[in-house]
Structures are given as structure tokens and as C-alpha cells.
Length: 277
Image (cartoon, rainbow, N blue to C red; front, top):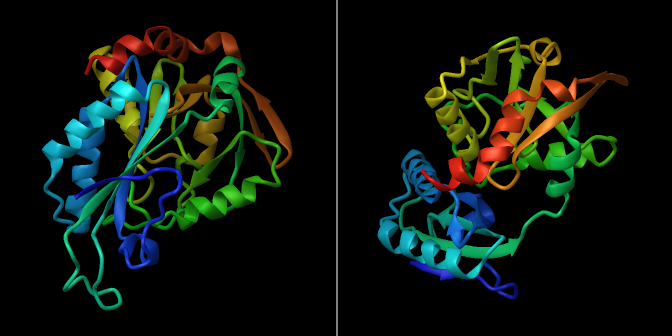
């Protein structure tokens, strides 16, 4: 079942996403009357459901509904949340009703446009991500680590934070993926054990591959990122925003904005490379 939520609607407390976060979601941007990278978002939802053993089957109807949303919600954000359903005793999934999908619409975050023009400042979170390969990569609804990270950021004079895992490997930011360059070599973290494999991240990886840009997807300590010549963060709403400053232990490290080679190229061509899958 597909349920369109209005601003006044409430999800029932008997839904398992209310008690256990038992589901997955994706957040999409509408541009030129199309949901950007729609096929990739559907694929991400399918992967999440498969990993969580949620037997959602209405994919054709969901795709059609999302295409309709793209026609009427220009320059807005569409969110799709798939729930396992109602019921079950405790954590047990026996007796749970059929899964369903909630669709909602919201405004585009206003601060992304300014950050895109000016670049952003990254701090470092003291909160480390737990390693759990069974959940790594997917955008499941249990996001308490991110809630704690955002709460910590309230007392930091930064735009976002670098988040590492319990082995002190760089993983991501609070709600975005990370890329950085040293010389001609690009890097992005390995997300096999934790973190979210974002739709935009995967799109950028594909763009770099087609453009023969050398990219290493691997584990790296913080210093590897701090020694970079260029860095940016990405998600489906912001696309790419370049990093201008790191603030670590009270010390500021400025990046040379004239070295933002890939960021500038992608920003110039983003409508072409994002909308034409």
C-alpha cells in the first residue's frame, strides 16, 4: 500500500517504524518536473528492503506515483519511507501486516544554496559510528547515531562534521558523503561496515569512472583527509558542496578554492549529469 501524507497526517503508533524504526527511506530532489536519479532511488529502496527482509512488492505503482510527484512538486523534496507494517509481538516479525510506503513532500533546505556559493566548514565529531556490516550502506530508519551527531553540532561553529568509525577511519559527514583529492588521486571512504551509501555518492562514483578520474574507495585515517588538495561533500539535495575549511581541535586549515577542479566541473554540468541517467 502507498500512502500520501499531508502536513496534518500522523503515522500510527502501531506501525513498526514508530517503535523500532523497522524500515528504510530515501530523500529525492525534484528538478525540471522530474525526480533526479529516480531509478537509483528505487534501487536503493529495493536494496534496503532486501537487506531488512521486508517484502514490499508495489514497485511499479511506487515508481508511477513518484513520477507524478515530480510533475507537481517542482523544486521540492520528496521522501519515501517503506515500513514493514503493523503488528508483531516485540521484535518478532511474525504476524506483521503487509508493508507499505509513506510519501511526503517538503521544501528544499534554504541554506544549501548559500553553502554552495561560499563553501563549508567541517569540524570533527567525537561520536564514532558502530560497525555493523548487515546494515552498512542502506538508509534504514534507525538513525540515532546521526541524531546524537547533530545534537553535538549545536555547540560547534561549523557547517557539518567529519564522522569516523570505531577504528578511527573517516566514513562520512552527519548527512552527506565525503570525497577528497591529493594530487590527481581521489578518495572516498569504504562503507562496507557502516555509513550510508548515498545515491548521489554512487552517481559521482559512476561519473568519475566514466570520466577516467582515479578514485580509491578504501579505509583512511583522518590525516589523509586533512592533507587533501580538494574536498567536497554530497547528498541528493545539495549535490556537491566544496569544503573551504577544516576546524580540528581549535585549529583552522584552509583549502585553496582555486584547486576545486572536480567540484567546479560537476557544478557546471550537474543538470546534465544528474537528470540523464
